[in-house]
Amino acid sequence: MELHDLRPVKGSKKAPKRIGRGHGSGWGKTAGKGHKGQNARSGGGVRPGFEGGQMPLQRRIPKRGFNNIFAKKVISINVSDLEKFGEGSVIDINELVNMGLVKRSFDKIKILGNGELTKSLTVKAHMFSKSAIEKIQAAGGKAEVI
Image 1 (cartoon, rainbow, N blue to C red):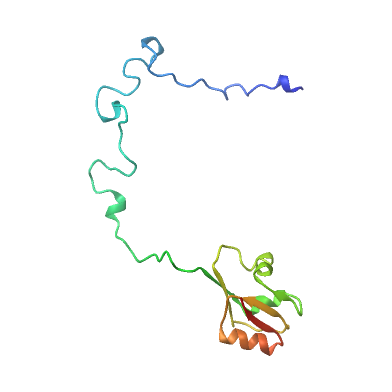
Image 2: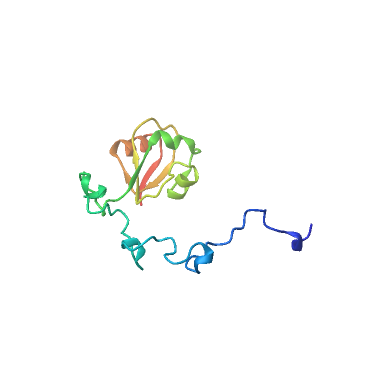
């Protein structure tokens, strides 16, 4: 088989419907738009979500809550999750992402004090809880705020 032998599968290529090209085509005169009315006019039709004057769905449903567009996305990681790292490791944001502890977008990372830590680690993050700092230091490590 050569490149010049290649052909589309039979039935996969279909000619476009050529509307408005005379009576003989079967799509002449009104070109499938019927007689008069909004959808027969050029530029006719209604915008998405328009329900013919009925109160549209997006306005019938009650508003709920508040979405703060200035909120910072803070991802929390427990001290027990840091056990995955080796003794004496320096853990920064890139290490957390590489190990799969952080999987989505974020603005800041906070280390929380849930669980136990037995290894001496240097942890670099944006925020730490008091209990997390105590546990990291008790294990002989350091908690550095970025």
